[in-house]
Amino acid sequence: MFYFFLTFNQIRKCLLWIVQRDSNRDPNVCSTHICENMRTAVEATNQALLLAVGLSVGLLLLLGLMLYYLWRRKKKKKGRSQYEELLSTAASLPACSAPVILVSQDSWNRPSEIPFTLPPRFTSQNHADSKNEEEKEEEMKMEAQRPQAHRGSLSVRMWYPVGTVLVGLYSSPPLNEVVAPPPGMATRLCFSVEYRHSSEQFMVSLLRLANLPPRFHGNVTLVEIRLLPDDRRPRQAKARCTGPDPEFNDCFVFQVSGMCVAQSTLSVCVLSVGQDGKRHAMGRVLFPLEGELAGAGRVLWRDLDTEDDTQCSEMGDVQISLSYSPSLQRLSVVVLRARGLQLLTDAGVCVQVSLQIHTQVVKMKRSCVANRENDPCFDHRMTFRLRSQHLDEACLRFELQQPNHVRSEPPLLLGVLVLGPFMYAKGPQLQHWMDMVNTPQEPVQLWHKLRRAT
Image 1 (cartoon, rainbow, N blue to C red):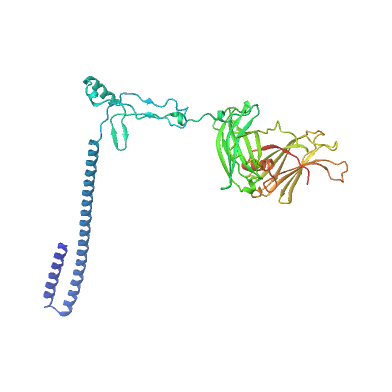
Image 2 (cartoon, rainbow, N blue to C red):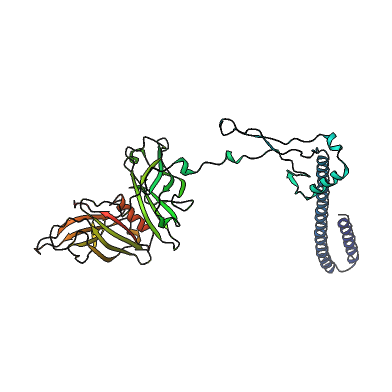
């Protein structure tokens, strides 16, 4: 600022001298010179002003940085002095002389009391002073070899045990001892169900499986749970171990109203995943919830329904394989075989498959006529073009027929089966359709019961 005022006074004196010098000249020339000199003086003044402002700002910044540095240095010195005082006041503990002693030996007989351990006893200062110098040197060497323990921001030279953790307090008995399976060699599923009316939640606790077939002992066991007929996406659980009795210990929650829960059916499908990644269906459990929610939380055992021990229905059964390719928008249907059919004539059996969207028949195909047996084998493959957005609107209708001797008469109907979403089917029929949708490009085959035409 002093430089600025000095420069300004010099410019003012220079202007006065120029005006006095030019006053003896021609007036017109003098005014012109005065204007030019004034312009030059103003420009010099602006430059001097900018220079002064810049220097002032720089000096202020430098002064601020110096003050901040001094403040940080003072704060660091203060913290270091407090830390040294804290270290100097830390109490020194004597060496440990006795091992950890268990106080409660019969803790398992009295579960109400929590077993605990006492900290070790320490030697007195007089006894420690009576040690000779050689023992002290050995102890110092042993302490130097031990890792240092950290308590907060303080480092302690020695370890001082204050007790032990009793593992028995946190270990639980094996699940096979708590929920032992009933006698028998059938493959069984252990689970429990509970419904909470306050929150309208249906809870399923999946515990374990028992007596798996030997060929599945080395595979990974998966379980898919659905609440039929409305649950469209399966909940999946993976076993924690392999072998004949895999355990799950998983819990699933379904949000369902109290009016609908009594009309629902719990579906549990057990799958075995081999080393090649392919899934094999071991069986399923269908558990109707009507009248089963009174005993909440009780452990239930149910046998798995496999294809081998499933009894034929009154009208007979048919085995169907479904697969869907989203990229090709193609639905593949394979009619494998049937069993337990009630034949009316000796004309053979065929299967008519119809693809419907709502109530409109989009495509209809028919298999070849099989031999005249109650358990015919078809192995007939059909394909239908179906877009992905129509999977929730379409269904497949299977009709097992026998040709009529009179061609003008319609064929004789042996049974009907409908596979589709929840709008058309429920139970295993709905689950078969949802398995096909959830596992694209993988064939899913199941046995289904035939029903009378309505």
